Length: 350
Image (cartoon, rainbow, N blue to C red; front, side, top):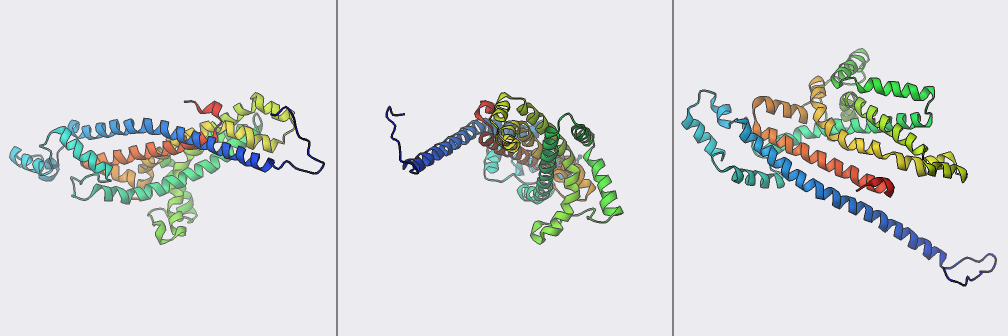
C-alpha cells in the first residue's frame, strides 16, 4: 500500500479496480489449479507402484494355483506328454519373468489374454459384462449419493432432534441389510406384487434410456442401501463437527445468513469424509454386484468373475483382477482430485 492515497471524486471509481479483481480471480484460479495438479502428482506417485506390485502378484497367482489349461482341456487323466504339449502351446514352458513381461505388455495395450475354457478374448468377455455392472453400480452410486447427502444434511441441520434420531436409526437398519435380501424383497414388491419393474434381464442404453433404467433400477436400489448409510453417517458427522468450529461462530457474529454459512463454510469443511467414503464404495459396488446379478438374471462383471473362478480359468480371473485394480485406482484418483479442489488447505493433508 502506498504512503499517499489518491482520493477519487464523489461518484468516481478506481480505474484499476476491475483489473485488480481480474488479477485476484486469476491468482485464485492458478492456486486452485496448482492444488489439483499437486494432488494429481501425489496420487500418480502412489498409483503407479501400487499397480505394478498388484499386477505382479496377480500374475504370480497363476503359478501358485497349480492350474493348467491342459487339465481343463484334457481332463485329470491326461498323460504328462499331452499336458506338456498343451502347456507349450500356451507358452507356459517359458521362464516366469518372460511370461510376466509378455502378459504385462499386453495389459498395457488392453489385451488381457485368452480364456483357457473357450479360447475367447478375455478383454471382449470382460467388456460385455463390465458394461452391465458399471450401469448398475453407477446408478446405485447416484442413488446413494443423492439420498445419503440428503439424509446426512437433514440430520446435521436437525441434530439432537427427533428427525436426527429417526434418520440415524433408519441408516443403521439399512446398513445391516444384505443386498441379496433387499433384492428379493424388491422383486416381490415391485415386480410381482406391483409390476412396475422387470424382475430380470438387461437392455443396453443404446436400445432406449427408458428400458435401460427400468431394468437396472431394482438391482441398483438393492446395492445402494449400504452407500446411503455410509454417506449419510459420514456427512452428518463431518457437518456436525464443522458446525462446532470457531469460524462458524465468527460467521454468525458477522451476521452471515444460515444459508451462506452452510454452503460457504460448513459444507465445504465437512464434506471430506463423505467424499472419501465414495472412493471405496464404487469399486466395491462393482465387485459386490455378483449376488444381485444372480437374483436379477444379469450377465455382468461379477457373475463372469464367479464363473471364471469356478471353471479354473486363470487368465480370465487375472483379467478380472486387473480390471478391478484399474477401477479402484481410477476412482480413488478422481475422488482425490475432487477433495483437492473442494476441501480447504487446512484439511487436505499431505
